[in-house]
Amino acid sequence: MFDLSLPDFDLPTLEAGWVWLAGAGPGDPGLLSLNALNGLRQADVIVYDALVDERILKFARDDAEIIYAGKRGGKPSPKQSSISIKLVELAKSGKRVLRLKGGDPFVFGRGGEEALSLVDAGVPFRIIPGITAGVGGLAYAGIPSTHRGINQAVTFLTGHDQNGVAPDQLDWDALAKGSPVIVMYMAMKHISLITQKLMNGGRSGSEPVAVICNATQQNQHVLETTLGSCAQDIATSGLKPPAIVVVGHVVSLREQLNWIEPALARTSQGTKLEEGSD
Image (cartoon, rainbow, N blue to C red; front, side, top):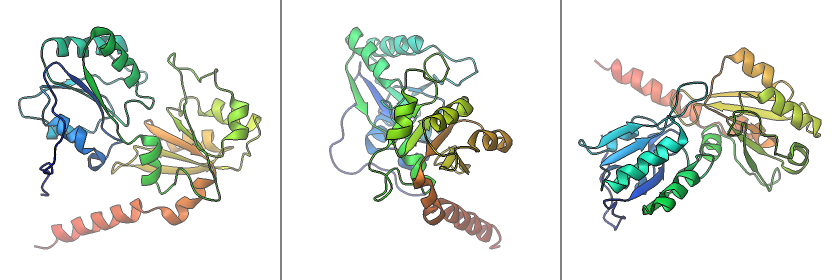
């Protein structure tokens, strides 16, 4: 067991009546920041999202109150307004509150909405960034977000709006023509419509696409496909959200840069050898 004691330098103090909005990263507990870990070890109450790996919660104090506030599409979920009200109530009661969100709280995480609710209520807060799945998930799949000679820009977008439908306020033609790499969150539900819009905007049906499910976790699965075949391949694969979809020629680099699967294979083989050592 490795030592997870915090280093000997000043880290911020989570004070009574404060809320820290912290990103837990895309899944792998090792991607948690020191500031987020620091908050976990001080908080009286931790309010966490559906995509936070529960192993991360083991860093909390034994007497901390743990409150689940996860929202999953198509399932009964707390309303965003209720979560914001709860954070205010907890802080006003003098609790030290850690709001733990998957990925980064300000990247499709509605952290801005929660922070504004705290501002309106006069509750002091701190933002702790996290590694977002659109960066960390690609890295764990062996796909660079940017690569010299392939792209000098990348676009992050959500595959559905607040009403659960494909966002119609996006200029899909401009995205298709102007962004060499497109990274999509929450896009599986409307992937057929989205891929068609991109191809209608001029993208080739043969352009590489990767679908990364359960990014950075041990059950991560990556489907490599093309823009034209993406929707059908997802349907026949049986893959389910959460997933990140990346469109662009950076996907082709995965053939050389896929480091995680060999690493997991070595770990698995080492475990088998250890089990058979008797």
